[in-house]
Length: 109
Image 1 (cartoon, rainbow, N blue to C red):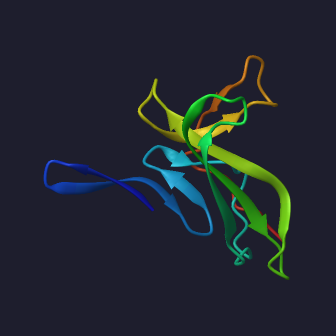
Image 2 (cartoon, rainbow, N blue to C red):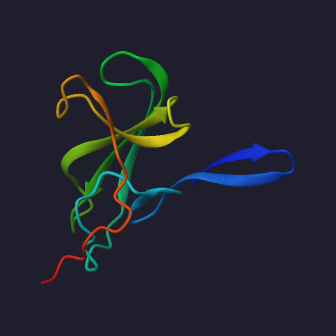
């Protein structure tokens, strides 16, 4: 979790377990896989992939042998909306933050 102290209370800015979430929804996913149980590998950076300074989290999903798989999800603070969001430097033109997914579909097997 990433927490912020406001007055005397702690507020969750980002929750990371088998999924990534903030108060507005899920981050970095298109669907929820209920069978997924392996977790995430975390790397902390002081700049986004485009070189913009700022606290950035790079997360890779882990496979069944606990090796990283897929492309990292890049999570950074979006100062425009005052929350952590997925940053998509290679997916959007110009690069920007992707919106959360409030109710992603559940993947059926």
